[in-house]
Amino acid sequence: MRKNINKLATLVMTSALAASMSFGAFAVEVPATGATGESTEGQPAQETTQDYSVGEYGKEIQIPKSVTTDINNPTSAPYTAFNLTVGKGSVAKAKQILKTDKVTKDGDAFEVYAGTDEQLATIRVSAADFRNGYDSFANGIYKDHFTVSVPITEFKNAGVYAFTLKEVKGSYSGVIYDESTYDMFVFVENVFKQDGTLDHLQIASVIVANSDGVKIGGGKLTNDTATGIKNNFGYEGTEEDPIPDGDTTHDITIGKKVAGNTANLSDKFTFVVSVKPKTGITVDGTDVDKTVASENQEFTLTYAEPKTVDETTVTSEKIKANGGTHEITIKNGEFAKINGLTDAYEVTVYEVEAGKDGYKTDYDYKNGKNATSVTGSLDKTNEATTDDNVVVTVSADEATLGITNTRENTIPTGVAMDVAPYALMVALAGGAAATFLRKKESFED
Image (cartoon, rainbow, N blue to C red):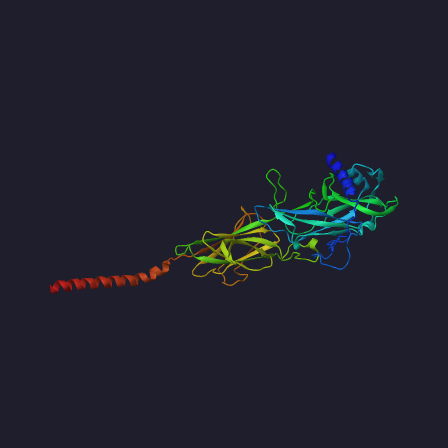
C-alpha cells in the first residue's frame, strides 16, 4: 500500500511538472450529469452552442469504464448510461492518501484543501453512455469512459484540492454497480512571468484514485495505466474467485421434438420468437438511473440451422427487446438459443403449424437446469394470439423450452365392435359363394 501511495504522490508531481505548458480549450459535450452529479433527463448528450469548455488553463480527463459479461453466454452491452456524482473531499483523507501534509514543488509547499461548493458548480461530468456505442469490446469486456472537465475559474490559490467521485447506483436489470467512493485531486499551480511576478493559475493535473492510492483515472488523457471504474453484467467470476450474485444474465434453449407412429421426422416447423420488457417496470424512462429495461437492449439469437442473408451464411443475429418477431425454421432434434436475457424481459414463442396436419402440439418449460417443468398445449388456435403463445421469463441459466408435435394413427375400439357383424356377414357370403362355384365345376366335369 505504501508503494501505491508513494507512486500516486509521484504521479501528481510528475504531471504538474509536465503541465507547465498550457492546454487549449477542449470541446465538451453536454454532460449527462449536473455539476454535482445529479441526473438530468437521462438521454444521450446532444450538441449545443453552450460553452462547457475547460478554458485555457483548466483540465479535462478521462476515467476508463468497463463492463464485464459472461463470455460463455454471449451478452450485448447494457443499453444504459453510467453517471458519476462529484462531492467535496476530506483534507484528512487526502493527506492520508498523498502521505503528506503539504505537496512541495520547486521548494514551495502547497496546502491541501477540500473542494468548495463554488468549484463543484463548475465541474462537469459526461456519462459513460453505452447507448451511444462504446470504445472497444474484447474477451467479453465492453469499454468506454467518463469525461471530467475542471475549469480554473473558481480556484483562487495554488494547492491541491480534494473532491470525491461516486458512481450513481442505477436500476438497470442485470448490472452490478460500483459502490466505491473515489478521491479526485486537482493540482493547481502558479505560472510566473519572466520577471518573477505571478501571471496566472493553471490546473496542472487531475488524478482520481481509490483509497489504496491506486490510480483510477486522470494524469494523462490516454489513461493507459488507469484501472478505471468497473461494472459487472452477468459475469460470475471463476471457481477460485466467484462473484456473489454475479449470475444476472441467462440463456434459453428452444427445442423441437416430433413423435408418433405417423409422424414425419423430416417435417419442418416455424417458431416465431419475440422479446420485450415485462409489464410494470420502468422502460426507457426519462431518468436513466431509474430505468430497469430498454426496448433497445439486444440479445443474441442463434438459429437452429444457418440462414443466407445478402449472400452470406449466418448462424445468429442480434434481436432487440422491442417485441419484433423473428422466425426460426426447425425440425426434430434441432434447437435455437437466445443469450443475454435478464429477468426484466419476457420471451414469447408460438408455432405457426401448431395443431395442424394431425399433430398435437405441447410444450414443456424449465426455468433453469434443475427447475420444475411447466407444461401446456399450443393447440387452441393457429393464430398468433395469447391463447396459443407460450410466454416465459428467464431468471436462471440453461432454461429450456421444448415443443413437441405428436401424430398417432390408432383405430378406436368402439369402431371395431360396430363393424364386426357386417364383416362376418361378408366373410360368410364369400365362403358360400366359393363352395357353390366349386360344386358347379365338379358337376360339369
